[in-house]
Image (cartoon, rainbow, N blue to C red; front, side, top):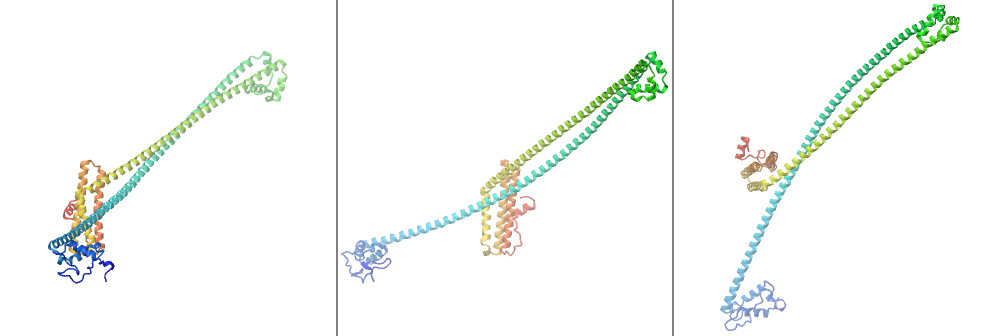
Length: 478
């Protein structure tokens, strides 16, 4: 059934009846000399409105007019068909080429992304390792600083104990000297008091002698009256005179009775004689006591002054010792803090320099080439393990180990050369060499672990080093 309006569906042949005279569509009467392909197209469009929207159907319908086309138009139409087919082939080839380029670009992009991701993972891992090493070194430095601080504090404590012991010994010596000085002062006081006592005795002896002389100078009447007194009364009068006591209370009743028999003048003269002795005795006693008291007071003041001086000296020495210990402690804290900060800064500088040099090593073309080879062997082992036979596995593992040894050797040679040419600090160089050794050992351990977990028939066999590496390890070199 034909669609309305005489349209032909895309890809379908136009509704053509049996060919007309000389071939071609039915009802098509060729003009003299035959149709041109343009006339054929117009005729087809006239009888099939809308077919111009379907180039393939229109071309198929024009082909039906080829038997009744003139030779020139037939040649043009065939050339146009050939050009169209060639254009389609060229277009399909270009599309295929573009698709191939797109696929290659995608592969290159994915490979570059994988490499960048691997480098990023390596950078992250290296940064983590550097942070771990920095943390370990920081903790080790902090522990060393703490140990030094404990040693310095122990030394300061020992020095403080020695100083306190020396101060205590000095205080004891000062106390002994003070007590000795006090004893000397006491002895001097006793000597002064003994001298004062002796001097008092001398003065008393002199006064006694003077009294004897004054008694000798009594009036003759008094002497005669005293001569009539008894011996006992005269001894009591002499004793009262010598002792300076109140003769009115110390003389016996018999002596007072005898004195009462004397005349008034004699009694008065005797009373004055006795009172003078008592007065002199009292004055002498007061004077001696005052002298002794003054000497004792001076001695006590001297002792108190020396004791106060000693206390002040000990207090000043103790304060000076405290200040000195405080200054030493503060100086020790500042020194430890400065040393800790210097060690932290040094470790940070070493870590930064090590990270920078490590990045330069990875940018080295020779190192990068060897690393790519090693990663290619690793990829083959990890992805194609089950498709490889035992011989291919061993050959790939040997090639991987050779690449790993070459990469390790290249890293060490680069580090040593860079260290000599750029005056790289020894601690940074040693740290870089340790990192290279660590990465080398970790790669070998990872490969051994992979082989054991992958069901390798030779899983107990370690990854053998390359011949060059084996020779270097045998001689202790790299």
